[in-house]
Image (cartoon, rainbow, N blue to C red):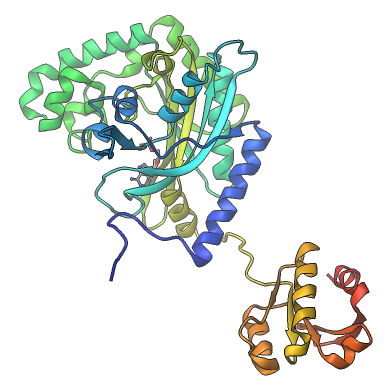
Amino acid sequence: MITKQKGTYDISGDDAKKREYVNEIIRGICEKYNYNYIETPVFEASELFHRSVGETSDVVKKETYDFLDRGERNLTLRPEGTAGVARWFIENKLYGNMTEPVKVFYNEKMYRYERPQSGRNREFTQFGVEFIGSDDVMADVDVISLAYQTYSLLGLDTVIKINSLGDTESRDNYRKALVDYLAPHIDELCEDCKERLNKNPLRVLDCKIDGDSDIIASAPKTTQYLNQESLDRYNKLKDYLDLLEIPYEEDDRLVRGLDYYNHIVFEIYADIPNVGHLALGGGGRYNGLIKKLDGPDMPAVGFAMGYDRTMLAIEEAGNNIPIKKDIDAYVMYVSDSEKETAAFITQNLRLNGFTTETDYLNKGLKGEFKSADRFNAKYLVILNDEDLAKNEVNVKDNVTKEEEKVNINDLIDYLDMHD
Ligand code: AMP
């Protein structure tokens, strides 16, 4: 038997319906905030992720699905959504003649070679938004507000942890201070962090091994190294969040796992019974990324949320996602001679907005009644030759058990009226 691969899963039945519901919420909110849907390819040139996400990031060092295709191209299954969107923006020269910022959202499968565990898989879905072309704090707030409201609509109480890495000067100053501080402790760091210290010291702060050590607890804080402009910007952001009543906590150790962030970084957490304090998503400003990928100097900010953890959080919080299980009508026929009319009426009901089923297995009336109950059909539309000769069908309300003969031409109006 061929089974699914480690870290992948099928989504079906009620789980699929719940995801559809989450998709609808996401689509609705993106429409209100005026983000347009985008799909980018599942695989891209490996170089795209190496240059954007960063050679020293855990994602690129250990987690990407890299492969050579039959044409000997170095390709990677996308591990995140921002790089693909940045590539699309640059490739299509959307920066020429830009009259409005580019605001897009994606909702796609991502691939990381991780150790599978609850809420962490090798193939997983992320919803994310990218806001390209504004350096204004209001754009940061747009993205954070959208993220926060999405969780609220899903019934989750979340807290947004925020931090600022500052502009290039602040980030460089901080980086230097951190290296000076960590260098004497190098022997106490894990193997990965020893390497990170030279290539990307900020990463040491969110190392899964060293992150909780005393050394890191006493390390210099990003916010101590913000220059006045970066500090003003950070304060402005907090003013906006206060104004819009978006709850946040400052966390000066938050740096985020990917290389390309500056200024604001944030992560969204929920306290989930039986699971704990869970990061559901995160994002930040990435002003340098588009230039790094050979595009123009272009400010941008974005956010991504993982579906797996969000679904887990919704389940554990005991939130009921409304999923539609019942159907509106079940069309029944007594014998073969009524089948064509059954097919016609079934289609007609569907085209008029009723979720409708019929019998594809020639079960006969008894079996059809059972099926209608299984589907929890609200109405039974029962066809027999005698009624059809008078252009009528028998409509039974499966709740009140009331039955009535209805002219076929009036069937839709009849069901609409009783709905
Ligand atoms: P990142 O792209 O690493 O910033 O992650 C953003 C969000 O995506 C996280 O907060 C998780 O909810 C989700 N996520 C990241 N990696 C995985 C994974 N391997 N499996 C499931 N969800 C993930």
